[in-house]
Image 1 (spheres, rainbow, N blue to C red):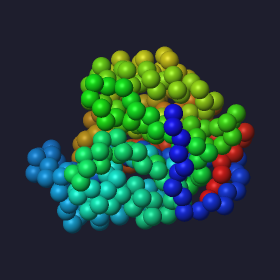
Image 2 (cartoon, rainbow, N blue to C red):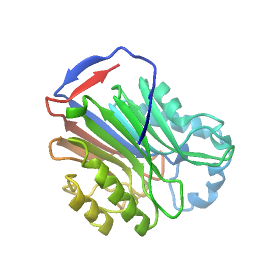
Image 3 (cartoon, rainbow, N blue to C red):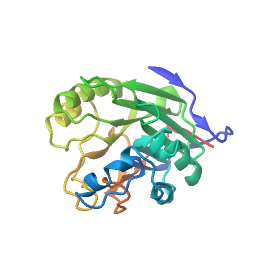
Amino acid sequence: MNSTQVSAQSQSPAASAGRRLRILSYNIQVGITTLRPHHYLTHSWKHVLPHTQRLSNLDRIARLVSDFDVVALQEVDAGSLRSNYINQTEYLAERAHFPFWYHQVNRNLGHLAQHSNGLLSRYRPTEVSELRLPGLIPGRGAIVARFGASDESVAVFILHLALSRRARIRQLAYIGDLVNEYPHAILMGDMNCRPGSREMDILFKRTRLREPPEEVLTFPSWRPQFHIDHILVTPNLRVHDVQALNHAYSDHLPIAMEIELPGTVNLLAS
């Protein structure tokens, strides 16, 4: 894995330990509000062209994510025609006052689109790396952000899996081997599959990640029927709450979780 420096607005760390962490995963559909099935057709032009409501919707998303400590973003644009050449991860970081942010461009279509994953954090990552996920069609990736010292670090994986089941099986098998390298791990993102699926079963058998106790319906946002957005954690991270938030700013609902970190984990605050 190639590591790189996370973008930051502050570099004055202070240690904290044994605390609760509020985390969120959200597929924001590049800032497009989708409230009905027919919007996929009538709003399809917004995937390639700018529109005036996009920034106001991003501002609503910024207010939502501002209550959290670590946010995983999927379907963000890193700066192209459709986003008015605005890096949406950076925009949300500034509006929601996150000192640390990072984006990963997975499919670069030049001026037309910059398909990306994003990370927002109130804590300084020790290291941030990018992964290219396997699959017949390129353009899927994952961000790995490590927080804390190496012997007691928490690794946060942010990913957006393929639509093909065969590709998802390969991708989760690949991710599973990496998750096992860390004492504490959090896996967040749009996985395009439900908890009882074959590919998720493979992930749970290969790792210490825990299967969610109940389904949290996140898609579609206007009438949630499917649990395809996930936050999975290793057993030593105690879960206090998990829920889908009823904020239809995208075709997905955000999924939120509050966890308690072991006292041995030290986070570096901004």
